[in-house]
Length: 147
Image (cartoon, rainbow, N blue to C red; front, side, top):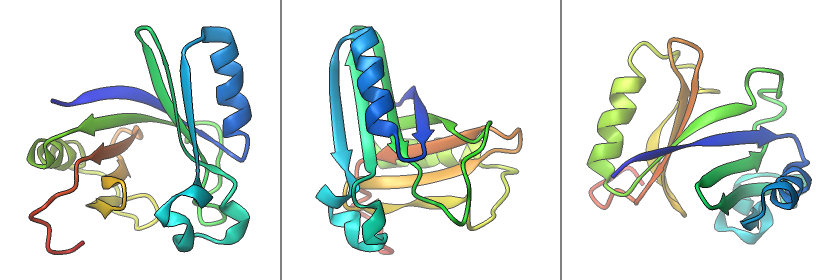
């Protein structure tokens, strides 16, 4: 089963912003720093205190966020700090939706990341032909020989 949720991108102040939202909305906040994950070796040490994943759940409210990790390749600016986050448990279902939505998307290597296995599961992202940013996360693809 797939579901979508808002996904916010911050530039170093994700923990502060998400803590503020929790104070306003209540609920449970989970913050994970890059330095506390196996992915830390993929990025420079100055990014290790940034939030790689934040999630706020409060009743029917559920949204996620992260600190910007792509700089200086891509800089955050008005319009590119929000994505639709698609989460799924079945790889084939996630891949089907990824392929359909990415039809006509710019395949720029800075903004298009094909679905692939990461330490936390399958991940991919792109900006579609209408300028909407999409991020995908799911279970690892056990049949993927590229991971």
